[in-house]
Image (cartoon, rainbow over all chains, first blue to last red; front, side):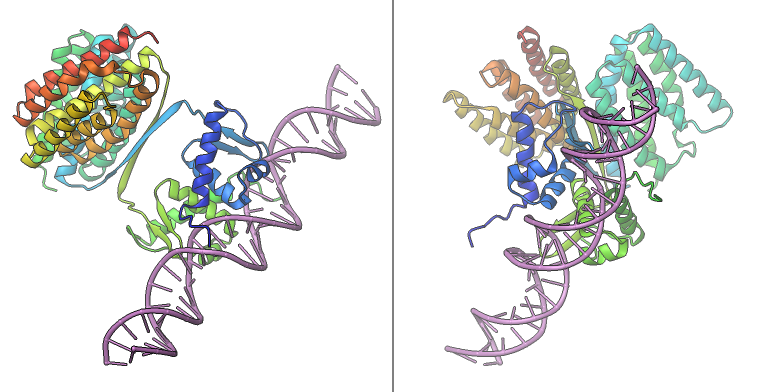
Length: 227
Length: 227
DNA sequence: CCCGTTCACCTATCAGACAGGTCAATCATA
DNA sequence: TATGATTGACCTGTCTGATAGGTGAACGGG
């Protein structure tokens, strides 16, 4: 008749609710009106409202607690996200590697500038453990992960760290599954040490060039590996 | 009494549903049973099921179409995501800039290697529009966005493009709001052209150095701006 | 003053009903 | 016979009243 609304109600409510939060300048932990009140405010039924809330909850905008109410969830943080197709093909692996080159390269550049003595010690002991595992022929994938994580932390850039952390999951998904830890990455092993030494010496160019070698070595492995 | 379930129903249903998809090996576009059937299958009420569906929809696992049904949505893609606090402080702005340097720098490097004649023409006409708007004193933030988007596309790396696209939202959130388009970024204007010329000429080093100048100019603005 | 009860307020979930979108089979008409 | 409107089966969208159960503050007896 008159309602030519092709937009779902829950969607409208969801937006209205976000506006409401912004206009009232609600901050993390602030309580929203109860579902009853909200249905009155927006003139919709409970189900639509609940779907909207569930939607916002999935997007980490609100938090719903049984018996307590609905609470705002850190509106001052920005959630970046994206989807990438996981295709275990050479091209996808190489594309991932380019992103890693960009992000981790920057992290290493910053780390070499900013690393503290304490962090140097941490990474040092991490590498000692790395060497030990290697010599005993044990799996090094976990300690390798820790190493890169520590370097990223040394870059002292929370945003970069956050992106890298989220992306490291992708690396693992790509590299653990198809290629396995069958010692394919042995060639990258020595570069961890040379790179660390350069970082510890605050020698940015050397650190970057060692990282580049590490990445090149990875790239060669991917290119020569028959997938 | 007996039910010590602190886990919400919609959450259980949500997981069961994902298991169902995996076990049946449903692929993108496959149709799930109707809501009616699903309520029977899982033994839950309509509302719980719908909340679960809405939750999965928000997480891009399913797609709900009115009158048609519920469909599976590309399970083979990986969703990277993370949160960063948005603080309008110098340090946060500079941290964001570092990430941009890393990602967009790599994009420009790749674009300078891979850009096609067709893409060159597109960017050329984008820059013409940029110039026109600039000379007429109109807002250039939108066309600026388009420019960078086209360059990113020219890098021909879908993963990098996805990350950059998701991050560009962050840039805008940071830079549009506090600093506004009050012509603060006029200093970056000429670099767009020099950078483009280098990219079009497949001159990687020059493109990167021009991008570096652009970023340095941005950095100076941030550092000198009283926040 | 302490502790358990009670009560108001909320969310969780269900079931039934009605509205409206979608699509294909069916049927009337030129 | 071909075409176009109609109908009906199947779905999702949304509302509502009812019941269950979580939470915390006020209340009241020891």
